[in-house]
Length: 67
Image (cartoon, rainbow, N blue to C red; front, side):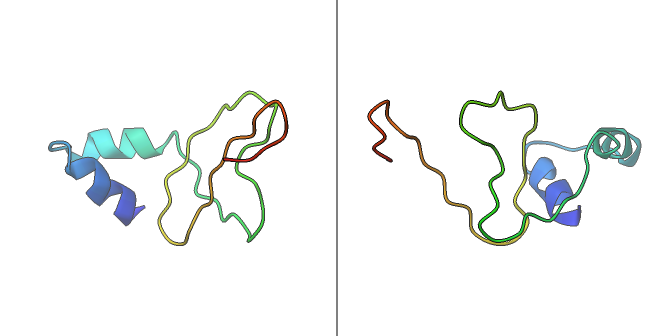
């Protein structure tokens, strides 16, 4: 979570108590290769913060074409 803390600090100062309260609402997970973070047709109920790696993002048209 150190990378996340440094990212948050780019937008302003944050004291330790506030940061501790903030990360209490987060869950650190590992997303294996080729696993999807969110899926088509499913309402997204989470956000992500990438600490390491690469993510591919795309949208699909009604005709099935990916962009």
